[in-house]
Image (cartoon, rainbow, N blue to C red; front, side, top):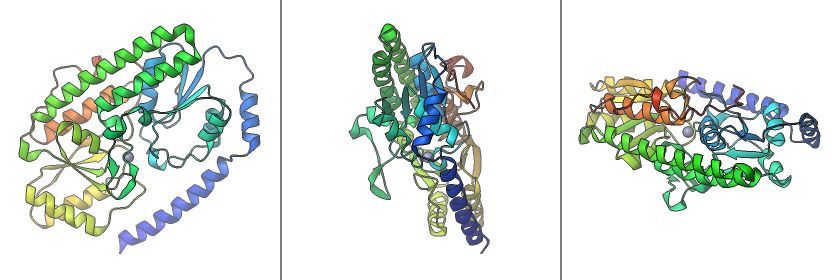
Length: 345
Ligand SMILES: [Zn+2]
């Protein structure tokens, strides 16, 4: 079967890539030495390294003008599959503080973060700032948590204050500013949550079903009252089986779900299989505008901020499932204006 051939080719390619990536990201002492050498020129601002664009967004907003923020994972790159390059590892080892999502989102990162911690510099896993009872577990692996916490603005709001606390220790002179920035981020996140709630509640209740390529929307669905189905599991590393797709086809058709969504960081292959499966039993399933799940849009677009990506998703979902598509605000004007100052990609 062509699918099977694709999987095998994919697996071989993934292994080859892993081997290559491991080769490019050695975790030997010489890497630390090189990083040390890279720190020699005097540095005006603390260097803060963030993994995903969403982590970079909140760190930049809290730090304001008082740090250089480097985001390692570029827009449109899947964090589940990201492996740091040698340059990324050097950047991590050179940082004054490192910020990551945690909960195994950056599962292929190796021991770079542990080495930073061993060297006595702070590593903050933002998901750990969230009340544990709010975390969802992986339906397929009970000991794992769902890492997609940025999808719920109310939870993501909780990540700002601990960043401010950490930065205040690094740079006590600007502590008040960090705390004020965190308060502002939190307030805007809560306003965004209200806006999303309004949009999603405009969808007729029988249509509040969100089908997407992978399981990134459970927190969003829980907060705003959507039944959520991801074809792949919580990580894009897992593959959907034909049985998974067939079950979903039957469910979607019986509920007359009008639209399924592709994601900017995930192949649309499984969504297309779903559309074909639905068509074969007489249900027309449309493909909606792409959603931003594990990455933001490109810098300088409205979706190039965390706030813009979440608002885009809420508007697209609402409009495609029969609700309103206008939240009452201009997307561009609502951005935090917090593009990571030193983002290299
Ligand atoms: Zn994901």
